[in-house]
Amino acid sequence: MTTLVILTLVDVVLLVAGLAVYLFWAGTLLNRVAGNLEESAELVRTIAGHAEVIKPAVEHINRTGGVVAGALPLLYGMAEEIVTDVTPRAEAPAEPPVARPASGRRPPRPPPPPPPRRRLRHPRLSSDRPDASAAGTIGIGGDLTVNRLGFGAMRITGEGIWGEPASRDQALAALRQAVALGVNFIDTADSYGPEVSEDLIAEALYPYPGDLVIATKGGMIRPGPGRWEPDGRPGHLREACEGSLRRLRLDQIPLYQFHRPDPKVPYAESIGALVELKDQGKIRHIGVSNVTEGQLRQAQRLTPVVSVQNRYNLADRSSESIVDLCDQEAIAFLPWAPIQDADRMPAVLSAARRHGVSARQVALAWLLTRSARILPIPGSGSAGHVSENVAAASSERTSDEVAARLEMA
Image 1: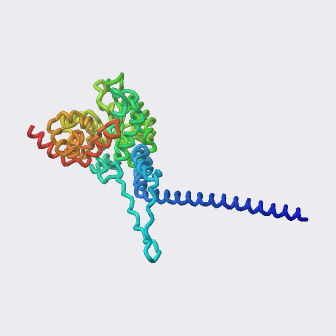
Image 2: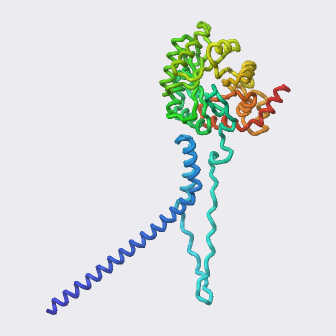
């Protein structure tokens, strides 16, 4: 009996000891969980404090219609800022005990200073973010309205406007950057690459924003890099238009331009082929390129012409009379090579230094003030150059000075 009682007491002692160990372990675990919860709550509070940082990024992506390539540098910069804030820091040494007053109560500690506000380094959050809409708008054909600073998609191809670009990703980023900055008019041609430019446009931007107008051209063939030959045969133009529709993934091309008159083909026959394509609904409006006033008038006798694309810039103003004619008749004038040789002109360089802008921005600003019917289409395969070009929409203050200096030269 005594032995049974002793064994029972031993069992009880062991049970109590085991329960104590379990409770001690459970208490330790709960303390750790509580600590983790406190750290998690602090992390949530830190991230919540960055809501003002995260919100502009979301708004930026929404504005660009999901063009993520243009927002990646912005997000990378924000991630760097946030990670810096939430990285654990070494604990500060313990403060010496504070002497208690006679009442025995510990005096309240002053509230900790607020964390310093970080300034984002990415320029797209600043108020001077370039936007093509700053150039105003222009109507084309009576039913199309675009911002008066476009994008020329010739330079997104390889050297000599031949083949694939050196960096396909960079070319795609340039196209997306243009649209992200408010450009809604893109000019291309089936001969750019050939075919490469149109393929890249569709890859970068399709499905297209609702306000985007894509203009393309037909009537040139490419025997090799840097080589161009006109082909105005109606059969070739029909084939070129079909190819552009397919590559651009369009049911109708908003603006189709006859690229260059072919001396071997009567001009009226070439324009007549475009009229047939328009009647079939494959193109919406007809434009001409590299024309004289006489050729423009001949085309106008066959069909409404909504645009002219000729070489025109500060250094080459041989199409001055065509610009005036377009101004008088509300025809859009698309100057190609709009910034060529601008960096070689003393008047342009002087104005650029005076206003802290680039020579190309001065040249584009001059075009924008030369006529309300001019729609510049600067091109580049670099997203950075695209931003610089679009910034010219707000640089019109330099154009008067350039014009005055050119008159004195």
